[in-house]
Image (cartoon, rainbow, N blue to C red):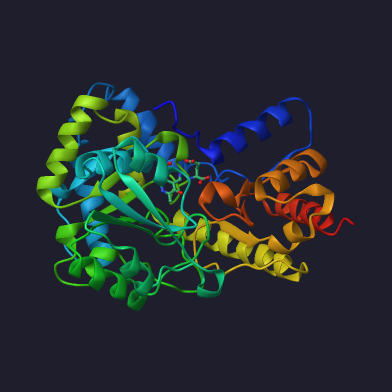
Length: 388
Ligand code: PMP
Ligand code: GLU
């Protein structure tokens, strides 16, 4: 446990906040957190829940109405039936992931994680006794895991494949065919699949979200979908996420949660219920705004000599290659960590080093920030990159 790394995203955000509190004009593009307020009808539902006395323990796996709403929402959006018994509501998607790893992994079980990966995956797998097997992907392949690479990584200890589409940190979205090829291999090799679909509603250019377990018959029995309200409804602080799993596994996850944390906040559950069952226009509006910002950020970054990035189809991150700048070694900087340190120190812009996502030579910028902030941040990044 002492070897556990802190979350690099949260650590950078904390540093940026501390600098801002000390009066420095910091542009924080580190943490992945929508900048919009939680929509008013969701806040009103929480206030009503407090007034109605919904402030006590709830069933450990969540209030029945919310489990049913998550199931109904998944059924409506994917076209495949999900039942309330398959849903466990947890303290955010991070906690949901922890539950899955604890429930499924035995000591020494290998979990294949394509890199770049979200910072917490490898640490949470290790915490549960699993062994992360990190598979690098290439920018030329839009950072997508290819089935041949997965096949080469399989061993008798392989137990699980972890996929995140739309991806944090790259924003890349797999096509259904690409996912089907990985699904076939997962079935052949008898792997469990954890599909982190927390960004499934934040997709651009008319893409539709495809949910992994719907892609082939027999997949739902081996897949756990992880989702939540943090990103879709700008509710990061409310701490509501969930798993959608086969019923027996859901029961085990619910039991684990009943021992570890009991229910997630009752008031937050009522807010999440309002989010899922109320008007959805707010989601579309936020998504459109993220797409506009994606256009701005991708175009500006692509203009900077030496900077390369993949096709950003969803989420709110630009993960760009700075290896040309690192190879030039300007100012003695040779790693993405040093580069981010210097960018923060000299230009007061907070990004997260690619090394935290298992992809040295890159950095991640969140574009979940107002346009003026993004423009100013990009000006500073450009100036930093063009210094002699
Ligand atoms: N998965 C991914 C890919 C994420 O980016 C995040 C962001 N925090 C999470 C899970 C965890 O979300 P939550 O805030 O619901 O814990
Ligand atoms: N997932 C977000 C990010 O990657 C929030 C921070 C975190 O949970 O680590 O920045």
